[in-house]
Every structure is written in C-alpha cells, then in structure tokens.
Image (cartoon, rainbow, N blue to C red):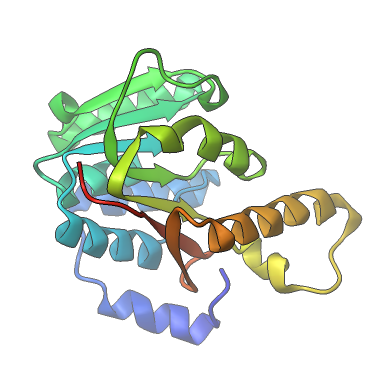
Length: 213
C-alpha cells in the first residue's frame, strides 16, 4: 500500500458495497495471504471498463479469480481470457466463476504466461497482474495483440513504494530496478499514452495510440 493509511481507509468507505462472493474472496485472500488486487485499484479499473466497454479482455495472472470476476461484472459484454500458472489457483477460480455465474465468459489457460498464447488474438483491454519481474517480457509478448485504441493496465507498478526510495534492501534491489525500468519504458514509449495512478500499489494505465480497429 502506498497511500497513507487514513486515506486508504477513507477510500474504502467511498467504494460501493460488493456482492457477497467478492467480499468472501477478499476475506479468503487476507486469511491465506493470497495476493489479490487492492480494492481501490480494482474499483478504478471497474470505472475504466464502464467507459471503455471492451469486448475482448486478456488477464495475465488470475489467482483465485477475484479480479476476473470484477472484470466480468464490470464489462458484461466482454469475453475474458485469463492466464494462470498455478493449478491450485485455476481449480479454485473455476469454482468461483461458477458461483459468480461468469464461467461461460471466461477462458482459462493453465500455463506460464511467458510462453504466450497459441494462435492469433486481438484484445481491446489487457490487465497485467502476475510476476512483477516479468512485466517487460509480458509486454513484449502480448502488446502486439492489443488493438489500437486499446488499454493496458498494470498493477503493482510502485512495488510497495520502493520504486521511489533512495535506499532499497539488497534482496529487493533487482526487482525494484526492473520495475523502475519498466515504468520508464511505459512513460517514454512513443506508441503509448500512459498515466500512473497512485492508488493501491500503483497502477499504470496505457492507451495504445492510433485509430480503433
């Protein structure tokens, strides 16, 4: 969390009530230390999806399906392709999709996201929330599938605020350097218009320039 605790608590009071299933998944994640996107961040993505109205969403990193359900509920006309490496998470997420009534709109690829998807694809929204040290690789692998006018949203780009710290522990130094490099890459990419949003653990929202196809 990079926002002050009081501000974060206040933000939570402004977020509309979620359904029972989402609240249950939030509790499970907290109790089992399963990393899921922070509530203010997914609420902002919900807002983006309401405006953007995508039809084809790619999610890189799914865990128990919490963010996937948010995506499906926020973009009711979209089909979601999710990639998740953990077999346990895939199985749990599948059960949660049934409970949420979104199974028919979610295709799950149980694989390493570094390997890419088979065949050709075109997405108008990509959500990246997997191994942070692989963000550049994921970008190179999947951005060609994002249509012009599409959105790329990356979570955890501030890496617990450490990207702005002068002193970083030796254990975290390599990861922080990668995240700093990736953020600079997004900021300077001539094919993108990127804004960094200081909520949750930091979101990067990038618009792929060009006319929508």
